[in-house]
Image 1 (tube, rainbow, N blue to C red):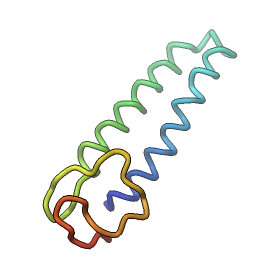
Image 2 (cartoon, rainbow, N blue to C red; image 1 turned 45 degrees about the vertical axis):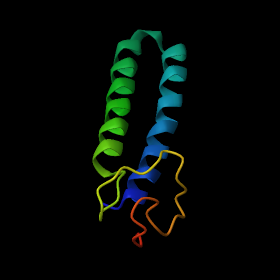
Image 3 (cartoon, rainbow, N blue to C red; image 1 turned 135 degrees about the horizontal axis):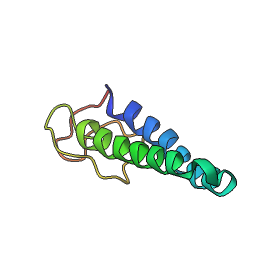
Image 4 (tube, one colour; image 1 turned 120 degrees about the horizontal axis):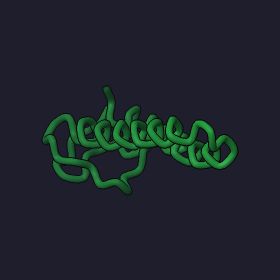
Length: 81
């Protein structure tokens, strides 16, 4: 999977991380379910970034602040997909 697709998916998952606390506030009866889902989404974000947010050529991790429109790896200079 492309690192940039993973980054876009983590942005979506981060939006879910914002929604879950709101759901907990409005639905206290199911708060443990929402809390568990929040932890699962957070774990998925971390795992996806650790596994895929790196250069396919040199295997160095990209900086978190790297733009999604980057064309070249900041470490090795190879062209990115």
